[in-house]
Length: 114
Length: 117
Image (cartoon, rainbow over all chains, first blue to last red; front, top):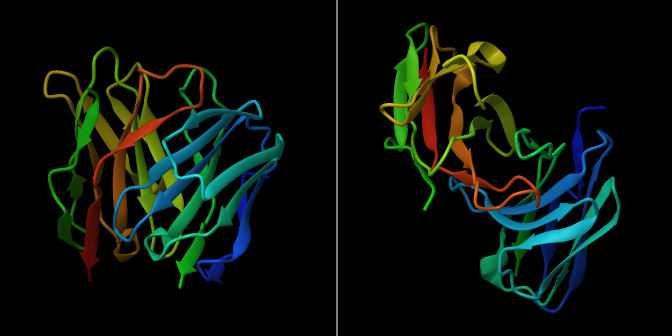
């Protein structure tokens, strides 16, 4: 299985809602990532988990809360988002052997905040 | 500071013609370079990477890239473009200031490739 899956595909939420994005991979990868991407722009790194520990937080607002329950799963909990948080949220994973490995991306969750 | 530049926002090519998508980089030390493609409403797909060795790297879907150290470039090429190659292309370099904490990538701004029949 060489796939990263993300659910849901689309999500519409109000500014007072709490929701979660889910990401799963079964490639045995030990690094997992959350990115935010605006239309026709490069992905912006949000968080990196390495061996199930948060290793990079790119100064993301606390209304985004990542969680890595096990080596195959990555969640992104959302609370009190703003309309400017509307974007495509991408999950990725990599083997992470000394940083030489490519990242495998999921199809993304298209988030709209009303 | 490490960076990647894609000087062209858009590249237009006729089907069957060769295509080139340009990328230049600025790093201290050895560069680890990647190309990704993104089709509409999809995630990014890995095309190829340069770590070390042969300067000509072959990748998926008939793409290749040439690493040129003297020109600090890593241009993506394909001998004969297809309409289905139309997509957004990103060049990226591994951020070498962060080690063993997950592979942080620095992306270029992206180049939109349009291949017309």
